[in-house]
Image 1 (cartoon, rainbow, N blue to C red):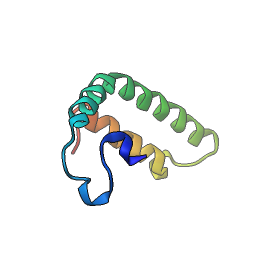
Image 2: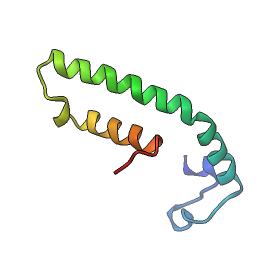
Image 3: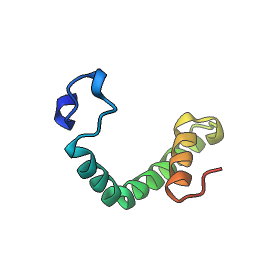
Image 4: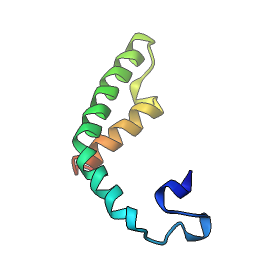
Length: 77
C-alpha cells in the first residue's frame, strides 16, 4: 500500500516524491470538510458520553477531537 503514495519501503519514507505536493494540496482543499466532520463527531461523542454518564473530559476520543479542532483553527495551546 505504501507504494501507492510513491514510497517503496521504510528506508525512503522521508524522501519527497512527486506526489507529496499533490497530497498536500488535496489535504488543504479537504481541510474545511475535515474540520466540520471533527466538530460533528465531537458533538455526537460528547452527547453519547453524557447519555452513558461518562465524563467527556476523560474520553480519549473527545480529547483528540478537541485537539484536532483547536489545531485546525490555529488555537492550539
